Image (tube, rainbow over all chains, first blue to last red; front, side, top):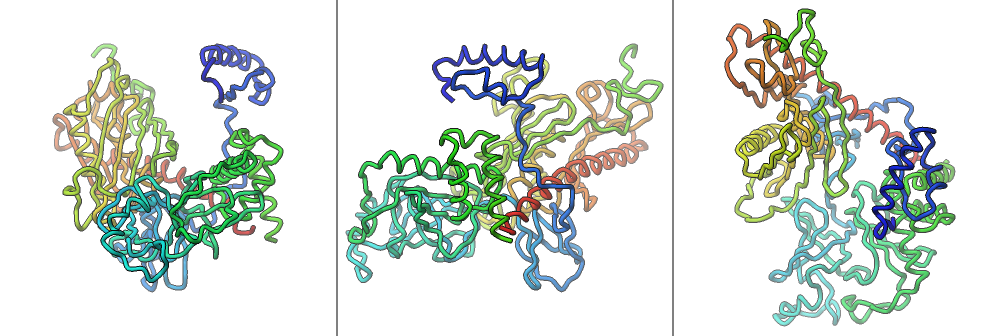
Length: 329
Length: 249
C-alpha cells in the first residue's frame, strides 16, 4: 500500500470504481486492471474466506465449554477439562485428545504453556537482582537467572558481584533472546536458561509472532534454511528469522551483536520468509522447516510484498498443503 | 396508547417479531489480531465488540493480585455515536461503572479462576450501537471472546432480557420496548446447567406473572445458546478438517 501521498485521490477512485462495479458486478481481480497505481483495494464481497476443505462432516471430537466429554469415571482429568456431577466436562472449545486414561481438550488459541526443554524466544523487560524478567507470551513473565546464562570465560566462572553490576551490559531491556525452558514453577512461571552456545542474545533479524499452537514440536527448532537465512521456531509462537551466521561467535558467549550490514539478497530472503510464515499462520497451517520451505518455493513467482494478499495466500498455501499431502502418503 | 401498540391484536411486536422471537444474531470471532481473544456480535441493531487480553502478569500495582485465583478486570464503554443523541461518555459514567461491575460478577462466576493464581484477565466491551439489551449483547460477546482466547470456563454464559406486555411475556426486547413497556428482566444463565448467574429487574412486575416471564426468558437464553454454539462448533470442525490435511502431510 502506497496510499500515503495520494490518499484523497485513491478514495475518489475507489468510490468511482465501486459504483462501476455495482453496475456490472465484477470482482476485485478486474479491479486491478482498472487501477494502474499501487493502491490495492478489494470489496468486502470478494473477500476470500479460507480453504474449502470442510464438507460438513463432524469429526466427533469437537467440544465447547460445558460439553460432557464422558460420564465414565475411569478417566483422568487433563487440561481443558473439569469434573462436575460425576461427569467430565470440557472447559474450552477445541478437540478432545486421549492418551491412555488421560483426557484433555486442546483449544485453538491459547497463551503459551511452557514445558521443560522448549525453545523459546523472549524479550527482556526488566533487569532486577540476579535475574532478568523476560516476556515470552506466557501467562506470567518468565525469569532468566544470572546463574543460568553463559558468561564469557566458560562454565566454571564464578558469578561475582561485578557480574551482577554488569548485567545490563550483557542483556538490557528490549533485547531479544533465544533460550530453553529449564523449569516450570508451581504457579506456571517459567525459568529459562541459555547455557548453550546456540542460545543467547539475538542480533539482526525479524521477529514474527504467531499462535503458539501453530509451532510443531520437533527435535530441532534451529534451522539453517538453504535460502540464505536461518530461522528459530520458538515453541511460544515467536519466530526469529535472521541471516545465516558463517563465523562461530564462540569466544564472546553470544553477547556481542554482529552489526555487519546484511546484503540485499539476504534481506529479501528474510522478508519473503516472514511473509511466508504469516501466510501459513493466516491459514492455520502448522509451522515447521518443511512447510516453510515449501511455501518459500511456492511463493517464488510473486513479489515479496504481494505474498500477503488474500488471494495469493490462498493459492500459495493450497499448493503447499497439496504437496505436504502428497509426500505424506 | 394510540399508535404505540407494543403488541398488536395479531400478536406481533413493533418490529414484526412474535412475542417469543429473538432478534437476528450474527457474530464473528477473532476480529482483533493483537488481543488474545475477541468477538463482534450483533443482536438486531445492538452491536458490540469484546476483546480479551490475558491471562497476563498484573499490570499496575501488584497489590491487586489474588494469591489463589485469577483477577478479572472488566471495562464496559459505549461509543459516542452508539445512541440516538450523540453523547460523550467518559469512562467514569455511572451507568458504565455499574455495567462493568455486573460483567465482572458474571464472569467471576463462570471462568475457572482458581486455575490462574496471581495473574490478571482483562475483558473490554464496547457498545458500537445501542438498541436495547446492551448487557445481554455484552455478556454474549464477551463469552465468545473468552472462548476465542481459550480461557477455561464452566459453561457458556448467555444473557437475555424479557418484559411483559398485554398479558404476554416477550423476549429480547429492543430499545423502544425497554423504554415504554413496564418491567424489564435481565437474566444471565449457564444454559447447560440451568443455573442463573445474574438477574436484574427494573420497575415492578406482578408476582403472578414473574414465573411466566422467567420461563420465556430462559427459553430465549437457550435459543441464543444454540445459535452461538452451533456456529462455534462449525468453525472448529472447519479447523479440524484443515488439521487433518496437515497430519497427513
